[in-house]
Structures are given as structure tokens and as C-alpha cells.
Length: 347
Ligand code: DGY
Image (cartoon, rainbow, N blue to C red; front, side):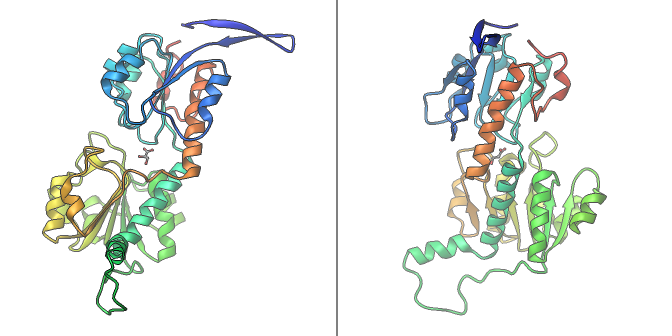
């Protein structure tokens, strides 16, 4: 169903422009939102410089044809129904889409897209490495001590870290980001084990990495890095039991989703000294971070910034917008998460 349409005249040709109503849940970096307006659509951008509340969102989506949302927004069936039967595209400005109820969208024949470009994936892979290096070499602790005036001259026994060369990196989830993390491990001469549903002989050949069942990966890795999406299967997959299987003194790095880890169990493993440290970019209950993490010297906590590079944000904006323009124009957009709905999508 087309909500409203106008006929425009350009260079003597009659062009049918479909005027859609689009809501953007927060201003995003770059100029891409302008393209939605230039295409003749009616665009409303949330006026708040903070995540929109669910109540506000329910009000704002009423009557929209397209929704550009962020990973901080919960897009469930109720919200889709609150929007109304004309909602025909959801564009999620993130790689992860666990904030969108995909089944609810598919049940309603609404296409959902995400923004998984090389630029974003590489940004996340690079941030993962920043965390691996920082936790191995105690960079944050050392920087804090230096800023407090703690550097009194070279000492042989301060901030002793660990070399990466010869160590084992265990990658859980060898999708696009996990693969980029694995590729970079070569430069550090690390052994790489990975775990995913099925072994990937091509990746093994290309990257010189080896498949390991989860228990073996946990037992052998000095660093374990998480790159799985959040699903019912992966929720709290790192818990008391799996943490106990990790090598003593090893490190956990999480740039995936906070709920993949049972944070209480992780805190216990860190406090007991079983784990050497944890470097986290994501948390169970964002933006709240368990204060125990903040009080521990062997944790690094970044505020969900793994994809926060100029290049990644630029690409995310471009993809999130072109998804909407393509979809409204009847062209199958890139990065459809629920591809099966496209043929019979809502119109
Ligand atoms: C995403 O895009 O899903 C990431 O979490 C951003 O860091």
C-alpha cells in the first residue's frame, strides 16, 4: 500500500515519487539522512540526543512506512503493530540485529536489513585486537598509574604483562568479524583455534587456523575472543561451567554482545584469579556496567565502541539509508536479514 504519491515533472519527464514517512530513532553521524529528504520523503529524526524510550518510540512510529533504528532500540511485534500495517521496511543501523524480533517481522512480511560492511567488520576486528593487546600489556592500568604520577623511573617489576607470540587465540564464532580477527593473528605469530557449527576447511587453509570443539578451545586458549551473534543458543554460553574450562590465567575478550556472557560468573572467575583478565566492549544490561568490573584492575571496559570509526560510521549511514531507498523503490536491498519475506513483502 502506498501511503501518498505525487507526480513530479523533471526535464519534461513525469516521475512517480512515492512519498514515504520515515522515522529515524536518533541522529546519526554524516549527511546520509539528507538523501532520504532529497528523495522526497517525509523524515522525522528523534529530537533526543539519547536513546529513545520505548514509550516515545511507540508514539513516534505510528503511521511510518520505514523505520531506521539503532541497536539501543527494542523493535518487537508490539512496536511493529503500533506502527501500523503500512510499515514496510526496518533498517537497523548495526551489524547485530538481536534488538529486532526477526520472527515477528517475518510473520508480518516486513523486510529487515542490517549494516554488515567490511568497514564495520574491520573496525570491530581492530578493536578486538586493541583490547587483546591492551589486556595483555596492561595498558589501561599502566596509563592510569602514570597519570596519577606513579611513574618514578624504570623498574624491573612493574606492569608485567604477557607476550602474544607463541600463545593461542581461541575464536568463538568464525563469521566475517571472527575471520578478520583470525587473519590479524598471523602478524603476532599466534596459534589460532576456532569454533563454529561446522569446521571450515577453506578458512583453515587460507588462515592457517584449526577447528576445535568448544571445550578444547577453552582449555587450550590463552585468549578467548567472542564473535557469535546473540541468539537463544549463545545467550550466557560463557558461564560458570565454560569459564571453569578456560585455562588458568587466560583472558576473555568480548566485542560481540554482553548477554553471551553470564557477567556474575565472569566476575567470580576474575575475582578468584582463575581468569587473568577480561576486556569488554559490551555488557549484559547496557548502558549499565556492573560496578564490580569497574573496580577490578584486570578488566578493561570500553563503552560499546568497537564499530566507532569514521569509516565504519560512514558506511553504516550509507547502507542504512540506501536500504530504505531501495526497498521503498521496489529494489531488493542489500543485507536483507529475512530474505525469505522479500517476494511477498508488505507493500
Ligand atoms: C554492531 O554493529 O552490531 C556492533 O555491536 C557495533 O559495535
